[in-house]
Image 1 (cartoon, helix red, strand yellow):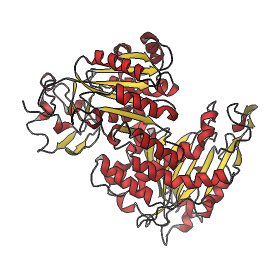
Image 2 (cartoon, one colour):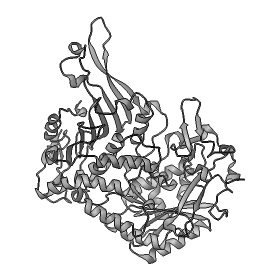
Image 3 (cartoon, helix red, strand yellow):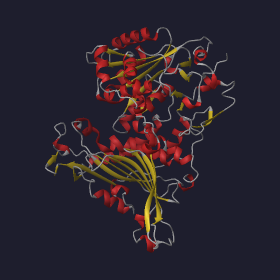
Image 4 (spheres, rainbow, N blue to C red):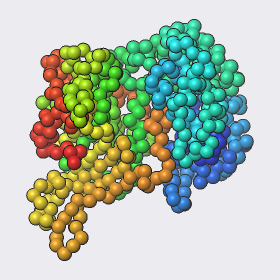
Length: 594
């Protein structure tokens, strides 16, 4: 049977049946050096049926892939050159045999996932639950092992007990939840070690080899540890626990430095031990369903792409708010502040995806090239276009909510902003003069993240008398709600039923919970699966990171050098009054005021 691994290397499927699918991974090994390994992942579920397929994304080898719910016909149109010979109907028992290295030898493969910092909150609350969800959905390969690695003394049983308390099942598949959890936990092991110890990573390598059982080994390391020990852990993992005959990849959790200088130093240090294509810088916001849908909304709907420019869009707002404070994490937060923690990464990445030109293809490099162009086209941020704030204690309904500096881990004289609003501009032909307003804050009145696109007023509007004098209230607005209650809605003007001519603003609403019965996967699930597959589209490239820091570093330096005092705002409010003056100065009204 001819090899088909490379044909499906950019396309993956998740079986919607209750059992995990068989999966094989083939690698082209360059000189035996794991740092240069190129990897391909192919999936081979039982007699692939379109109704059972979960199409992850459109890859190079696939010209178009459409999955329509509610019983409608599903269509997958693949390149005939790439998918010769009816590959979608190959039985799994045959497909298991067809994984090929460059020398033509056949191997079964395995994936070993090591969570470095396994005893931390991120690992417990996000990473292990995400890995279980992937297993639960049948999206992990047949042969895989998960290792927790941390300094804490812990047995395999203690790790499994800790992990089991955080696992949840999809609502639509709970009938086999307990069984799946038991199977998953049997794949979880623990190794105690220091993050800078070659000896301890050598011992980890020995344990991984025992579980790999001579199979072609692929290894993924997730660094859920403080950034000051990233390099030590990478050095040890690269030299002592890399795969010999497969790929080795490392997921690096933010923050990626505090400014341009520290970020460049971190990148330089990591590249001493890893190639760029081995480094997966994770920003979990890029894995959120509505952010992932952003390019689909724009590039696959004819009605939106022609409107996506300065000619029709008045302003774009990227709004992030949390209804809680630092909650004991003040020590970490005080070192970074809201601009570094949210704006420089989450919101700026969304902005780049929103504003980029149409990429040549859906290939990771083509998309990231366009994002970098946006970042490099952005005007330097002026301090007068920025408002910073810090929440203070307030009393509501007899309950006292603490201020930021009331946190015992925060210095009493701290000037670290917990709120920031900024006006940014992209100096290119598409977006010249359009303000992109960012707003992010803690201890606000609500928890939400959304993108608001406010369109220009209708010139010579015939219905001004019927709609009132406040044109901003009658402006069409497209809202993409990232969280919670994920949805997309478009505000349109509409005649109120009756004999008179009275206009009202109504929503054309796509509420995900009402439209789709499936649970929306957590962002970490999508990103972990992409890292296993080697799909880099939603991960940040080093030049992207450099461009993002180049935009914000001068502003941060000016704020800190001038010791700018943040404006106080009450816990649970809408933030500093200065944010409203900032918007008004650019002839904008914040869309979330209603």
